[in-house]
Length: 503
Image (cartoon, rainbow, N blue to C red):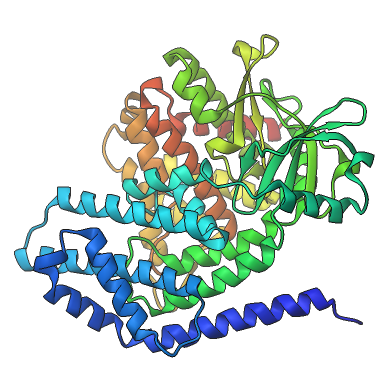
């Protein structure tokens, strides 16, 4: 068997990036506490000025890294993350010394650091940008300031020059593009860390959206993840307001699926079939003859991004849109056991349509992250929710074990902690009635169920379900005035799915 020379080259570059990063981190590991101590000595002068502290740490990192062959990207990321870690360590020390802390000052620190992270993601693209986009969809992991800042990354990713995209298209179609399209717009209609979308016209006048993978996306992202993991290994535990190591592992797992366009095409086709009979929900039709390993071509769908549609809608229309949104995903999870696992606002369009119920349709896009739940897992989640809603602690604990939740090492209390976390919102008398009266509080409580418990290993399907719940919950909280209750709809759809399965 021969080895593709491109794969050998990619492996060589990846190995070099890992080696250089590990050298740099090893060289810097002994300097981290020194950085914090030196910054603490300077804190009277610079602690209130985020930029000055970042510059101070950046200077120390450059001095500490002399003689190490790390890439400029690795040094830039290291300096930024260490600067943020030192600022949080200083603030924690200040709060401990005074036995009290200013919530307002901590919020300012969150906002300042979040802006720095967002700028870093925009500069570095690749896995760094992917990390920022991933975190923007996890309000259960980050303070609100980070979610607000990083959410702009979904709209502000700079598009690559059309020449780069054209070269990718020519390589994929192995011939002149005029043989497949009569026209391709050079300006991208959407750009992300791993792909961008261009509008095109087919030879018979069909209106298409072409999703083109960024050239060398896989090599660049995996090399960046290696660098980020090496840097993360040098950071002291709890130095950042989220678990960067776990997050990077999750990104590494998801990137391969997102770059497999053949699999994405299959996901798109299957969800289109499953959702055909769901009123007011659409999935674009694929032009399979114009799809390749790195290009997806599908029917163009006009509409407003979900967040724009909600912002422009009346209170009643917001209620209708959000209710249909939650029902759509609950149906996918509980009835089909096959669901779109990345429902952020950029992946959902709203189109005015007189033929659809209530005069509008939801259009789902981007099927790089889809989860298939086997019947036993789907039934397990149904049993788990029934146990949660009935406050059955034994049932919750037993079902968690059957679903694949495992306790790490000797942490025998992990399942108990997870059970308590799930039942906590129901411990108060009249909690269910409160959920119905206060959708915002109800959604916030349900979002907490997607958080991991220290010492507990969670299965991947729970991570993706948690992401769906957290994302939908965040949207509902932002539009709490619409009066849509996530728990109420989930409970209704669960009962309907169970009724259908027993007929």
